[in-house]
Image (cartoon, rainbow, N blue to C red; front, side):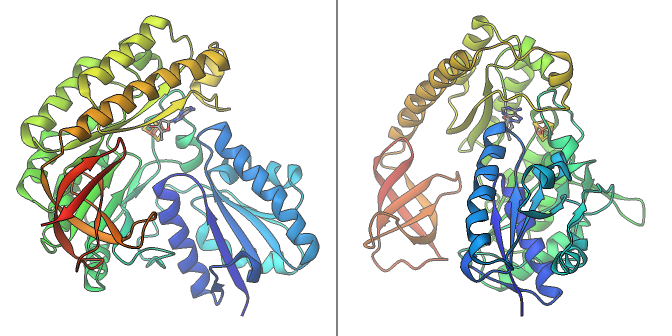
Length: 440
Ligand code: 5AD
Ligand code: SF4
């Protein structure tokens, strides 16, 4: 039996896709290996969102060349967003790559691998308007047996001016809700206690049933949450323009829908938001934050932000810092703007903030957010949370870790706690990233 090894870079959606890829190739008779050394095919599932993500993959591909010299039968393929973006150009530039496969072409991987095995090269980067892989039961790779991703929709057509995703993942399409509920129920039966529903913009999830009755995201959440109160439900990502009160009402009605909303803001300046084609203003965004806090007072809010987008002035940057001070995020993913070929911004706007200045602004945001996260965490001391125990702490075998509903990591003395169960933990001490506590 020939073996494949999958290496995954980038977002949660890519990790979910890798599990679909494993399932497709397993079904075609390939073994799915946990070790590079014994693989006949190495599949690299890639991200194209920023240039540094692509450089990391290129570096890895070149590193694998040495292994291929030692083992001439070993074939390397590039999958996902970078494959879609560069297409067969990638095989010309990196000549040890034998196949490239875009995010909607995974069903054709068995045929591609067969071609490659005969000594050929293969490329399939066709995008689809309908593919959701709804009928494929993912092979859970290297998971903890406790939490799993479920992809509920694919693609994006928001066309934020800086973003390459609409070009690499194609049009938005939603997956049949029944297959989502079934997948979650099966996972729960196998002992899983947390599912994260994934899409580029989950709030625009919409399935047209055969009867013409649509299922929207709040309705889907309601159905998944109703499977069992012991199954935690998370979701990502929400576009602020589409975050509805209806969803917040459904969340409030189910204790097992986690109190954590990822609401990427990107900038605190209306002028920048307009140039970014985000379709909301700071006022709108703050109204959504206020609504979250009204419906779900204990909800954590996290974000994404970009420093140094085209034409960003010091005043624009200051407005971003101001917004961070106002919202006081629990966590933020913070990036420097990276120009992506083919996007609206790359065609019509100048990438005119120097690398040094982007770094300076980014570091300012990081430092501010670090202080806010620590201050937020200090207020947690003395609180008791229900924690889903995930496993041993990385630092010490004597301690376990898990997450609360707000998605904060708690580390605590092991006691008699067991992974995959819920325990109450009191917070005794904190860092900017972790809460330290004891079982109660
Ligand atoms: N440069 C920097 N960051 C980007 N993101 C998306 N495109 C770019 C880009 N060209 C960020 C956004 C998005 C997150 C997933 O990645 O903040 O929310
Ligand atoms: Fe990119 Fe905007 Fe779509 Fe998010 S919503 S994937 S940032 S285009």
